[in-house]
Length: 347
Image (cartoon, rainbow, N blue to C red):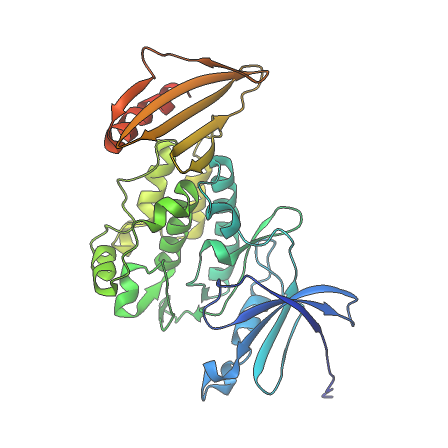
C-alpha cells in the first residue's frame, strides 16, 4: 500500500558555505524529529532530464551505511529541489582543521584510517565516491570522521570501472581526464586528502595553478601535488605511503582501501607535532610524557631563515643542541633539508 506523507523543516542558516559545487547545506530545525538536522538541497535543474537520478545520492548513502559514513534521516523533494536530511555535527568538516595549517600526524593517521574504512564499505556496495576531500569528511560529535556528500558517486560496472562525469576541483585523479575511473581513483583522492592534511592547505594550495591546461599537465606528469615536497615534520614512512597512493599510474597505487589502510596502520607516530603557520614562519610544538616538551621554530627574517630548537618545561624555554640544531642565514630549501634531519634526530 502506497502512503503519501509530508515532511517539513525550518531553515536556520546556511552551513559549509563555499564547500559545495552545486548545492547548499542548511542547519535546520525538524519539528517532526524535534531537533536540529543538516539538509542538503540540490537544484533539480542539475539533473536536467534525468528525473530517475533525483534520489541517487540519498540512495547511495543509504545503501552504504557504516560508522564512518554520514547516515541519511530521509530524502524528499520540493518543486525545485531534492532535499537530503542528515545529522548535524557541530564540529563541522575536516577542512576546518587543515585550512589553517597541518593536522597533527596522529590526526592524519586516524582520519585516514576512518575514511578508508568507510570507503571500503562504499566499494563493497559497488560505488565509487569520486569526491574525497577535507570538506566531505565530517567530524561527528564524538569525534569520529565520517564520509559525506555522494553527489559525484558513480556505480561501478561488472568490470569495476565507471564513466566519470564528476566535476573535480583540487583532487583530479590523472585517469579521470580520460573519463574512465575505478577504485584506484578513490585511492588517489585519499592520498591527496592525506597530503593536504599532513602539510596544511596553505602549503598545498600554493602548488595549485589557476591555468587549467597547466594544472592538467602537472597532474598527468605527477607534479601536482609535489611528491618530493613535504613540510619537514611529516614522518618519512607517512610520506612513503602517501606517495604510493598518489602514483600517476593507477596500477601502481594501492589497489583497495583495505590494502591502503593496512599500510597506513603500520606508520608509527612517535612524536605528535602541533604546527602553527605564522606570518614569519612555522612553529612546531610537541608534548612528551615525563620529559620536557619540544619547540622548533623556522623564522624568516628578510630573505633568510633561521632555525631554533628549544625544550619547554614549566613554561621555561631552554636552547637545545645549539651547536647542532640551531642554524641561520638559510634558504627555504636549506631549512627543509636541515629540519628533515632535526625531526628525525628528535624522534
